[in-house]
Length: 487
Image 1: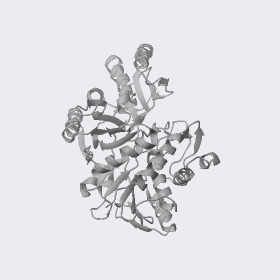
Image 2 (image 1 turned 90 degrees about the vertical axis):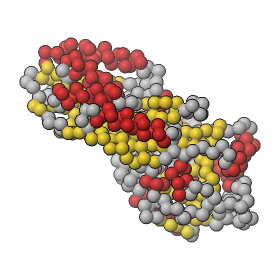
Image 3 (image 1 turned 60 degrees about the vertical axis):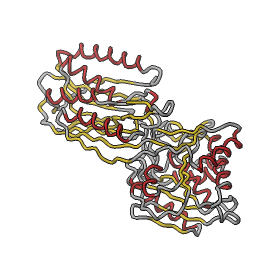
Image 4 (image 1 turned 135 degrees about the vertical axis):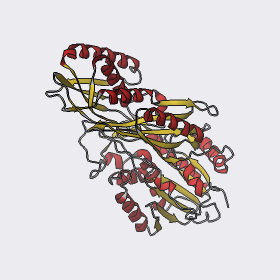
């Protein structure tokens, strides 16, 4: 680990973040990080509990003089999104994140950084090991699988926690205090088709869409960023309609909560159309690049002729319905909130597309702060794919977090923030999925709030965490702990 990271202030925060980032911690494979955080708590002599789904709770008594304050829950999630650039050689299963300092930012070398939610977890660790920070009784709740299903929060049993206030440390703008978030649901379309032999006198091409920014499918969905799967479908749609292009395989995107940055397809066309196809595709590429020149200046779309055409392809009729269903399927912002300025209400991310060997799959993540609107959009997507003969599964639904502007802990945080920073914080709801709404189903009387340091580019290899913001966040957190209301 770079000594440069270990020397950053606050050292307690950054040193714990470095230790955490040395542990591989992909969603649904959190065994190593669960063992790590349990060992951390036990080595401090604190009470450590692991529940039936691997959530970890570490309890620390109140410091002297704080015993009469309301007990609190400090909460963060242990898993992180694993994404890397195509040219980065890195094994998330065995390697720790390689970090470096770039001005005011901490970044990773070609991969996601894990600041989401590693900085929140590291802050909780620093509080637990401190002997000087004043605080009430603490239950540190470390959940698992937040990024790909919220299963940790969804399966946390009622009655395990005694805290009256929950501080979730998982938001990404340091001037905001979150009091609400969107819910989400997975939409998965799958179908099988009978491959056919590639016709004689065909030529094969590899089409690659790359260089997109990607990002968080909740927090970044409003930015008008390119979606590699939708861009690829535009090319395939035109190639099919004008030149009889046939798809052999597609691999686009990876995780539901990450806007897809790359897609690769192998296709064939009749050799008689070769020259016209290349010319037409270049025209479309130029159009797409012009459309996205402001938001996606590094977009690349590359056509490479294959030495040998693929042996098997999707039949024309199946492909006819596939490219049209993909064109019909909603992606990006669907509706803005009527209740909060500049807040996305409902959106969809066409996250992952795979085609080949007689099977196709399209995976989406639909989000909304309005439960009925969430399922309405999910049914729109279901209809688009069922019309082409797909089996569509709507699963993994989790609720949003309904804003409570009258929250008592919010009334405590606002003047603290104003005293420290000379201005009022922005009280907001966000379009990302936070665990507060889910946790609230079993703890309806718990007063919840969310805040965190500034993190940009989450869920992409451009993820970076502000050093100065981490210092601001740390001071805010320490002051909050010292001013938790009495019971």
